[in-house]
Image 1 (spheres, one colour):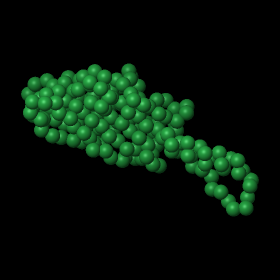
Image 2: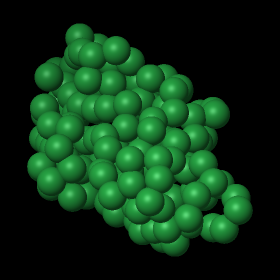
Image 3: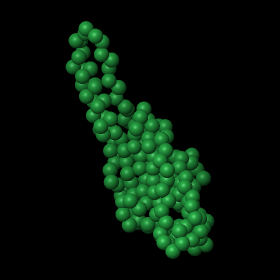
Image 4: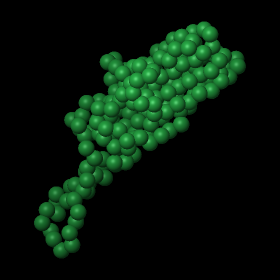
Amino acid sequence: MGTIPTPATFVAGTSVGLTAQLNGLRDSINFWANTPKCYAYQTVATSLTSGTTTVLPLGGELYDIVQAGDTASHDNTTNSSRIVVRTAGKYQISGNVSFATTTGTLTATVRKNAAGLNTGGTLVLSARSPAAAGISSILNLPGAVLDLAVGDYLELFASQNSGSTVLTDASGTQATWMSIWLVGS
């Protein structure tokens, strides 16, 4: 379990422990220069049944940075729909779902600790829009900052109500994705 480093307080006129204090300051600077973050994306399209909300597997990563000794935040095989928090703090959450050509209304959501259930956990982000006629549609989830504890995880969901099955777009790293980025304590 990672923790956010806190440098010691310097006291005027004392040199006792100066090396430890400076090393703590260095460690804090290094941590904030490369904070825990993860960007996972779809590598295989998901079939969305009309009227059903579906959790989206994320089979690839652009990056998955955690503190030394921590387990990765994302696994491409086991529970690939999840990004798991390894260091508690405030995280910037964002995502995107791309849909193949369809009609009807499209919905994308991010849920915390949902266990793959579209009604489980806590709704974190949501976007809903009518499908664009005759072209692929993209729902960009507006970013939000959320306090997350160690072990919390986020999952990306999608639904549509066209009356037929629709595929998500998994054509690249910017089609269907979710990311978290530690921005504060």
